[in-house]
Length: 71
Image (cartoon, rainbow, N blue to C red; front, side):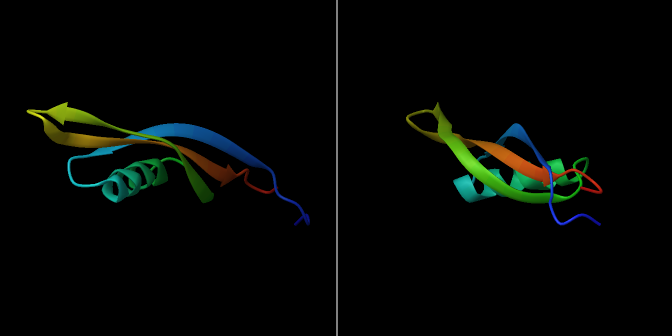
């Protein structure tokens, strides 16, 4: 095992009718189904869809960092 790590980032958009936090958790849960060794995320954009003058759903753009295996 080396004493350094190499990472890769992917960008995703999560959405939820409930909250920004739920949109984040939803995106992370979906990503975890196919991305292993996820270690961090950053929110790079927050927006929403308006329905009848109110929030229809929240959208959150995330960058997710994951470690390259065996690095």
